[in-house]
Amino acid sequence: MTVQRINPSILSADFVNLQAELDAIASADLVHVDVMDNHFVPNLTMGPPIVERIQAVSPVPLDVHLMISDADRWAPGYAELGAFSVTFHAEAAADPVALARRLRQIGARAGIALKPGTDPEPYLELLPEFDQVLVMTVEPGFGGQSFMPQTMPKLRRFAEARARLGIDVWLQVDGGISVDTIGIAAEAGADTFVAGSAVYGGVPEERIAELRAAAAAHRH
Image (cartoon, rainbow, N blue to C red; front, side, top):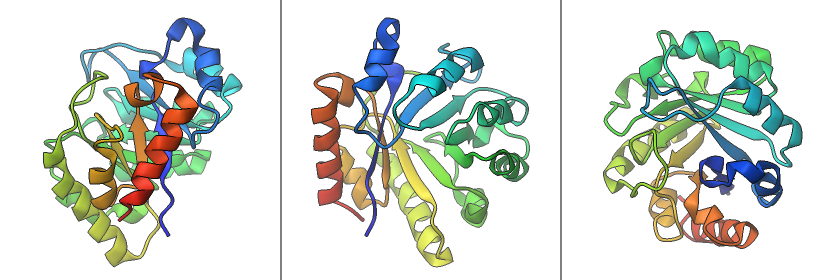
């Protein structure tokens, strides 16, 4: 049976009271940490020093999502901070397989993310090299965007490849995930769900439970 993981994005948290906001999601599976560099995406969030402090105080492991250029150079540093998983963008890596192997060697789960317009075909046979595939369901760079259902065929391609290869790769979705859309992604094969405003827009513990139940009701 597929496990439904809920990873709240602290992009929607109150950054002034970040430790309290982390404590509020203690019932989550992981905390999704969006690192943006104002280059690969137009927004700017945080870098290694802040991620290191989050790592030190978070009640759940870190799921770091790097929306940054030159991932081959910078991604290993986040694994060295102790992050549970480090996901880099396919569009920002010169050698995704070598980078994933390096992340695993350091001790982190290696994830690869694809923008909505990126063709999944080159990565289907490479799935054994990764621990997680993040199918972006919005354009990366901003929170609060609407879910893009047209990304679901891509997610299904990865789910089919995972089944055909018989491997345990997490399939994550990020962008516009709410109780109204999480079932669509779960039916298409997702098992790991990033949610920002859907969690922090209410009582986080209650929202996490609602999302998990909604995903489980539509599991692939």
